[in-house]
Image (cartoon, rainbow, N blue to C red; front, side, top):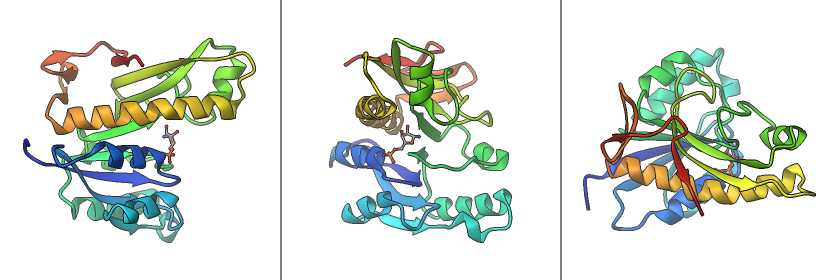
Length: 215
Ligand code: GRF
């Protein structure tokens, strides 16, 4: 096994992406999830973490006066675990510029659209409204631009006649559970990093779309 890569996961909700990551790690993996931190005390993802024996912290953002003061407390909670990588897995907070800069090059996010399409919320409905023939999900390094950082990997699904936002979200979620662990293991295995030339995988710059994952 190569050098362990400490991973801290941030989430606000169900945590199915966290579960996929937990399930993808075994004794041969470099990645190890040190902690799961949520801004919602009732996030189901915290239960998933506890069931897997992972340390959890809940930091209720409503107890803080400003975004900056919450983010400063969050940084302290995260850095207590000396992470090499911070993984946003459905963390429903806009992060301050200071936070993003602090974790530059070691902060990943997953977004349920084929970025740069549909930054922000309601991505599945927006893809349906636009009559897109395909939709999907993207993993990217986080920068100060919301959902705008350099892409690591994308995966697409066809949009079927009769799809609803719910049915489409379900299929996209299945793909998220494949591409997010893939990207985290690349990073943990030191195959993936962000350089001045952009996103590098195995020593080569990736295209601006990121790696295209095919099922
Ligand atoms: C996912 O759709 C992800 O793309 C978005 O938030 C959702 C989290 O889902 N960023 P889960 O909590 O991992 O099930």
